[in-house]
Length: 65
Image (cartoon, rainbow, N blue to C red; front, side, top):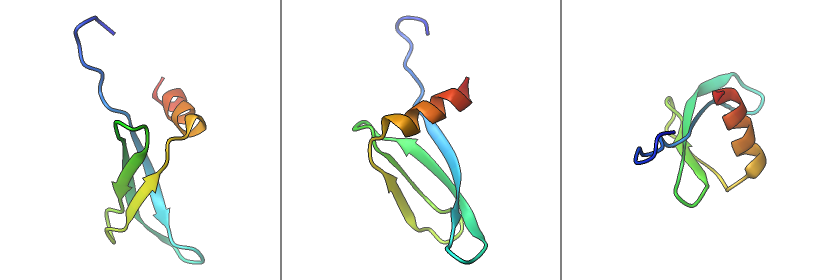
């Protein structure tokens, strides 16, 4: 990336699946400054948080490239 340009925040898209039921909605997770990921279900509004996880971030970066 060119020097002086700000890096775009990482975004991950997943689905909210209710156990023993169908998929509820889409969850867009955004990486926070502390390395955690936050988002909420597009259908029911349930909040989601993933603590900082190098393996999760590596999978996101692999899909991005």
